[in-house]
Each structure stands twice: as structure tokens, then as C-alpha cells.
Length: 270
Image 1 (cartoon, helix red, strand yellow):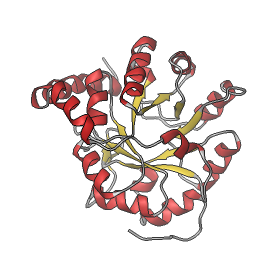
Image 2: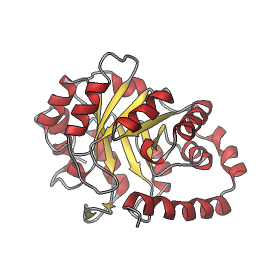
Image 3: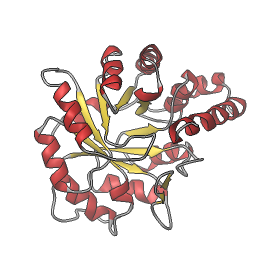
């Protein structure tokens, strides 16, 4: 019996087939000239500004935790993130398991000026074209679910289209694939996507494997709930933090984001 990640990718095949019927690749290619040039995500996430670099995630629900927020309003959340210093915004676009929509990318592009990550289960060239055509400034590739050549090809296509892949790793095998593919924006996911279990020791261990390697922008993903976590991992070499659940479940998103960034008070409430 397959795990939840296998199940998601099985459903994704149907989603992609439907999308291809509704929006042929030729249509997506035609849209590319209409979208703004992708923002320089590597610079945005590598530079230290007036607070820690947070990729704040819009995520309605998960297969592991169910609904995360009541009265979900994706654009209200996007504006609150942008107004309170998020370096980038991650948008879950999978509808079946996360309650997302690719249309949120288009809407967010009109509402906020920070870089947008299309977070989904991408395994085809069509999805890379789709991500750029709908306005994503960067896109997620999950190393666990791709072989090293597939990963490299999907990264190369993104480069050709003028935007960057965030390559997500969870173990040493994933890390080997990512380095083979010459990933520059490298995520370490503390959550095992096959079980949902989160363990910050994953980042601690893999950061040790990366010591001495330059030219990487490192993103810590999952399991970050408090400022102390961020301070620890920044001291170990992390540049940015992709945070969803602790923001989505916060009583006040703006205050939680400011706390995680290292500010005591909210600068702007949504």
C-alpha cells in the first residue's frame, strides 16, 4: 500500500490531465509574455534585512492536520503577510489535499509585491510552464519524488523560463540529487511527507553535510513554531524559513509573523 505522498501524486496525474485539456501547453506559452518578469528570489532570501527572512505560507488544510483556519480568505492572508514583512509568500495550489487553487497566484500577483512560490507536487514540464504563466516567481520541486535527471531537467526548464526552483530535500539521498542538479535554492524539509512526522533534527543533520559548500541559499521548512528555532538555525547557516502551520493557526497572523521575524510589535495589522 502506498503512502500519502504516493497517493497525492496519483491524484496529481488526473489534475494535470484535466489542466492540459482546459489549458493546452500552447496557451500557457502564449501567456508567458504577459506575466511580469520573475523577481530575484535568491537575493530576496539571502540578504539580511530588518528581520529574519520568512516565506509565509497560505495553506488552508493538510492531509495530516485537516483544516488549519476558519473563514479562510487567501488574499486577506496574502496582504497581511506582505504588510508585515514576509520576504516571500508560498501558495499551496493543490486543491484535493490542501484546499488550494492556482488562481490564487494570479490574484496574489495583483495584490502584493513580494515574490510568490508556487507550492505543489510538480513532476512535469507542463506544470513548470503553468507555474510561470500564472505568475509564480519560484516553484517547488520535491527531490524525494523525482529522480536526479528528472530534477535537473525541470530545474533547467525553469532557468530557461527565467525563474528559480526551490529544491526540497529530506535526507542524504535527496541532498545528493539536489547537488547533482546544481540547485542554488535548497530547502530542507523537517517533515517526512510519507508519514507527516516532523523532526528538527533533520535540518541539524543535513546542515552538517553542507558545511563548506558556498553559493547556496538554504531554506528551513516545517516544524518552526517559535523565534528560538529561527535563531538556532540562522546560527547554523540557514538563510530563510518556510512557515505555514504556525502562522495559519495563530490567533493573530500579523503578530506571529512579526515575532518570528524578530520584532516584538506588529508593524501593520491586516
